[in-house]
Image 1 (cartoon, rainbow over the protein chains, first blue to last red):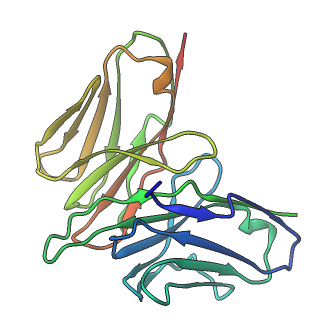
Image 2 (image 1 turned 30 degrees about the vertical axis):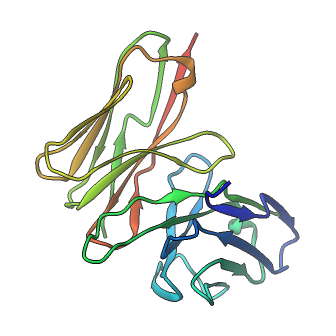
Length: 117
Length: 110
């Protein structure tokens, strides 16, 4: 399978614990996005990378959240001191931007469902 | 802040009926995507529209991008139970991030 993969699929953690999620994008894609989705809502943008550079962060991304893409391939999203409000589906997507063509399509992974108890 | 609105929020119809769902914004997008999402899964890309006024067909699904590139519609002909899901529209503005609407939850009853 050469699509976007996310690990783990499900994570249950106690409030106050730290969690880390991993995303492996489609191999030739240079952009990688993180979104959060709560029940009944559309995905909310968190951050995105072009290669290893983090180009934009949403105000939703508090200082407890950090994302990295150290070699421009896979990415990790860490949440420190988790709170019950962090419970959501965390979605990763990747896309390919070529030259001056700014139109692109995002392909999503299956998501990581986080439950904070 | 760019926002996308979708209507209706919920739609329940009988198999065989036709339906249209809408995606609207006050902002211009360079392209717009439609996705379908099933419970517990990530969104799956259905189509991308780029040119104002563009119409794309995917079997029983017809997608249209508004002339001003601010809105879009998705029309499903002769809906089937397999069409059930959350339909999301997402806009991208000249290489920035994707902005999603809240979705239309469609239930097609047998």
